[in-house]
Amino acid sequence: MPFAQLVIGPPGCGKSTYCDGMSQFLSAIGRKCSVVNLDPANDHVSYPCALDVRSLVKLEEIMAQDELGPNGAVLYALEEVEENWEWMEAGLKGLGEDYVLFDCPGQVELITHHASLRNIIHRIEKLGYRLVALHLTDSHCLTLPSHYISSLLLSLRSMLQLTLPHLNVLTKIDNLPNYGPLPFNLDFYTEVQDLEYLLPALSQESGRLGAKFEGLNKAIVELVEGFGLVGFETLAVEDKKSMMGLLQAVDRAGGYAFGGAEGAGDGVWQVAMREGWRGYDVQDVQERWLDRREEFDEVERREREEVERRLRGEDGEVPEMTEDGTGDEGDEVDEFEEMQRKFQGADGGVKVVRREQG
Image (cartoon, rainbow, N blue to C red; front, side, top):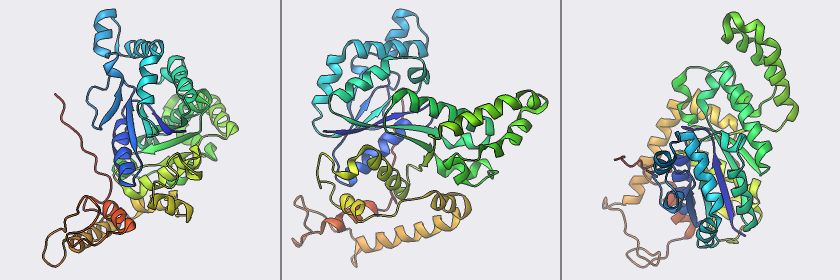
């Protein structure tokens, strides 16, 4: 039974960047991974694409032939995928038991008002996939109370519509210091409790119309808190600890942590999970990216330099690895040491490579 992540969220939230980074991270820990592009408008993917919807239908062709705008063309394209399900089914069966990342379009109406994407998801489930929906939101929404409340409503609607194991993720958390100080600590926004403290800020943001919308603001806050479903994980895609923490949460939500299709094939990752590796909680994120960022950056820089010195050895050259996992002198390299080599390379984590368009 293969496992998969359904990566959704509004445009610009970092879905493709996440798929690129997570596919590299999964490869580093020894988990076979494939990425499926379901966005017919995404013609410059930065990751190796195992299955691309654009080989079936292209957005620009639909816009030209049917005189549709970008959003309407995306809806039409997903209907085409649903109608030609045999193409998708054959492509997914060709991936075997690989762990799959589905990079979805960013149009919100595909989840809130349209049935094709949900129908495709249900058919994927019938193939035996155990899906976890990952709803990404740009952390910039925390800078304005109205944007944050809107993101809460969208996240809640997505959870109710998809009926899948679901995680909401605040992306680009490493960019938060660039937007100025937040009125509350980060855990206020991730735990989504006591939202009534936002009401004065919402009224102030609305200016002279604030009093007019007080009742509506209060009703929305009570609605979100009444369901008690929405909460957020955090992500800085180029930080390995952040990726480890998020993957741990995904694996537990989807059941992979309790025995995946590959058994113990993840090696060190399975051992870490079974030994109860302490996750990257919101207090750690607050300290790392908001309170003491410069100190942590300096510590990580020194650690990278130390790792580089150790890897180069006394002669200043990096020892070469042979195909059978041994060094130049034939000594076997311990699996955990090789894992550390991958995690503690000079780049400090996942390296996101963005290709030039054109």
